[in-house]
Amino acid sequence: MRAPVIEAKDVNLIFETRDGPVHALKDVNLTVERGDFVSFIGPSGCGKTTFLRCIAALETPTGGDLKVNSMSAEAARKARSYGYVFQAAGLYPWRTIAGNVKLPLEIMGFTKAEQEERVAKVLSLVDLEGFGKKYPWQLSGGMQQRASIARALAFDADILLMDEPFGALDEIVRDKLNEELLKLWSATGKTIGFVTHSIPEAVYLSTKIVVMSPRPGRITDVIESPLPRGARPLEIRDTPEFLEIAHRVREGLRAGHAYDA
Ligand SMILES: Nc1ncnc2c1ncn2[C@@H]1O[C@H](COP(=O)(O)OP(=O)(O)OP(=O)(O)O)[C@@H](O)[C@H]1O
Image 1 (cartoon, protein in one colour):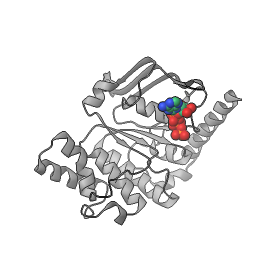
Image 2: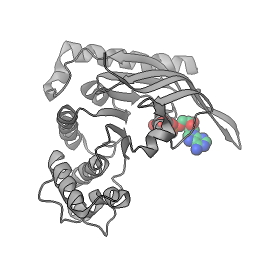
Image 3: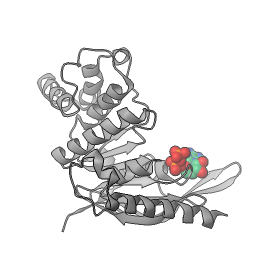
Image 4: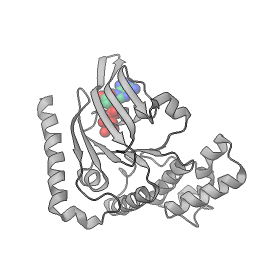
């Protein structure tokens, strides 16, 4: 049996706002195992980002229990258990690509030689060899996002948290990055938590799809994908198995809305 990396038991998070309490997460129960690729999908406000932020100890649940690598989320953050990729690449324009990727390593006190070695390794993992000396503005949006993935991978955390990393990119670039991300995931064996609004993206990438609904933010379905683990050709999206899972996700999203009405 694979080891659990994320274990959420009855996790609740209520934000106290001026307009009253907002139940961003209600009774969330989820186990993510080592090497899983988990997508969180659901309409705006269903708590996808909040849950990812709880895993990263950027938010604290108001109830329940959340373990990351068998520790509290706070301890896992201190142990540098995860890299985080945001929707916007967020690269510093005054630093080169290598300089951006290196930044967390500088902060963590890696030696210069280790920094160089790791930067070369992760830039090659995201297919950006030869671009280390360029500045962010010299790269396309897709390449910038690959650089931000490299930065999140630089210190070799075994969990990668990605909050709609490809949401702002056009579909062709997104397809290519999805394909590359799956290759990277198979090559590294990382556990990935991935927020998306796109059904095809969630189904194409994931071993587990978590369907969520808003008001209160909650999980309405967890789908274990029968598609093969590892690299998947983009054409898999035309197979009956793929379309069947996509249908189940769509039904889950629709059911969540019905509950809302
Ligand atoms: N810091 C905060 N203070 C108050 N309310 C918040 C805070 N962060 C999130 N919320 C509320 O919690 C709910 C869940 O928000 P969250 O951003 O997690 O949803 P989401 O599913 O990621 O949405 P989107 O797809 O738009 O990013 C929303 O109602 C949001 O307004």
